[in-house]
Length: 154
Image (cartoon, rainbow, N blue to C red; front, side, top):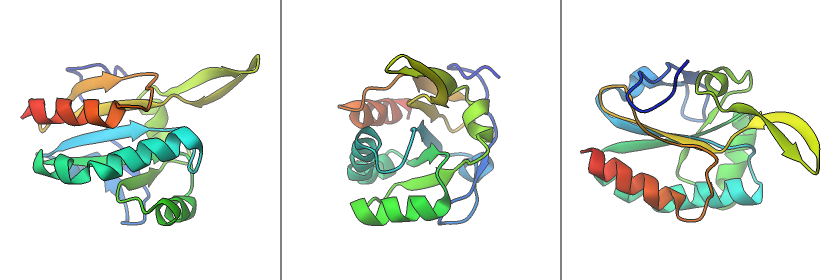
């Protein structure tokens, strides 16, 4: 599946504390779908806090935000409570959406290769097409860059 700007966003259904979250639920709205490796790690926590802090601005831009990892709904709940997160978190334990968006990749840590989630963000337009993609995201300033893109998308 091609997940580049202009392509149709792959359909997904994720479990969450709010119930099932599906791409079709956001038809006519803009959606930020950000993929991250693991709840409660330093980079992932910072990213979730940054997106949470900007939720009012995303709302003004008629844009929803969902973070996605393989963590369980229960683990997401603890993560949200511990850090007072307002962002929706989708659980994708089978990596169905993760693979559909092409972010299940080979990674290397201390010379050891393993498969894991690439930190990546997709901005989906009201038309259900991918408007912008960020791969290999560096967390500082990222949520702000995504917000600017969502505001510019109109």
